[in-house]
Image (cartoon, rainbow, N blue to C red; front, side, top):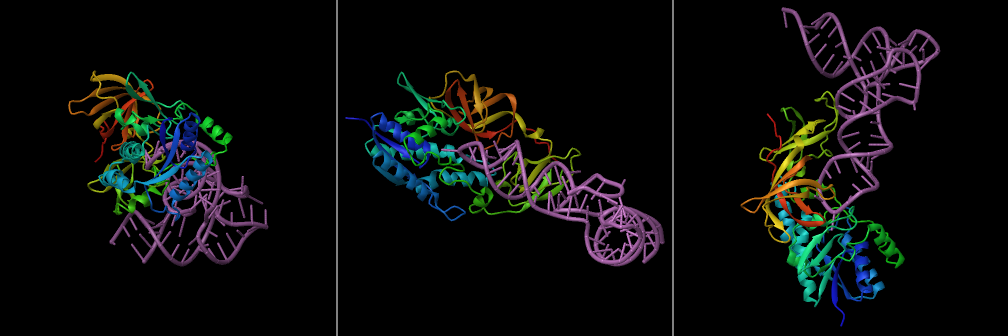
Length: 367
RNA sequence: GGCCCCAUGGUCAAGCGGUUAAGACAUCGCCCUUUCACGGCGGUAACAGGAGUUCGAUUCUCCUUGGGGUCA
């Protein structure tokens, strides 16, 4: 009796090919499409419908059963609420990391196992190494597409029954194979934007959940150079959308960046040209998820990322008494942002991550 | 009120009788990207209005209008 595997299918090439590969490997494959967001996008279309159409097309081609599951309530309660609440506090959360922890690798996996699955698979670019009864989250072969950053909050237990069929393939190989097997999704554009919600005019989207609140845009020495619709819509280090241009407060001119957010007074501080105040060497997380449990050594060298696709940065980590982690980078980092995740690696193993909660050495000189 | 300056795209700012009227920032589009951002590449966009001088005016003169600055 062949093993049964449920594949989380999004309607993209990656999960399509994942399903195909598993079938080729002799698994009994079931496609499961998750519906987590039902609202229409700003163009009035609900991309979930189109995506499900692609899932259907691929599953029919592969001759495998497919189902859909609606987790929009769970998504709203366990991911989106927190997302809105964090933005309201002036932080910049990463909903996709939370989505993986709470939805894809929790609710979804539970439903999949309830279908009698022995394994659950997704089209993520990453790997799991099952060695000596342990399960390690490993980086993808395609360094350029590696998605371990988004998985930093999963636990070893969650990885136990998970398969990542395309983790050892390059994106180009995935597309080639999909093409070769005639999958309709072979040349479908990669999806971007918040997972399940998609590419949006972000400020406009947020304003549907967090009311606009006009305030001043000031330079660090206190001159008003413009107005904004709410500091929480902005991210430290951001340039676009400030609407401040030409004013020569800096003799060298240059682009304007968000330098500091005063959430309490709703004042956005900006800097022209000079970005030195955005650089810092240390960060402290709010708790920390070690995929394989807290390490023995409380201080160790590792590589870290503060953003998806950032080149790994060498750093020294220290596990604090309260379970948080303090990371000290060898090189200064630009725009370490509260609410984003710091993800750690030792070699090709992603050992975990935590929400950035404080950046003690950031220069916030300001009148 | 008298006198004196200034007036170019959204903003800042080149130009100094003949230019496809620079550039920067903003903005927009594309690329990058399963977060938010950063980044790369492109595009749109201007001589305040009216009279002169001149073969020819953004460039010179005058007036109007609109900004400053001064002096009673």
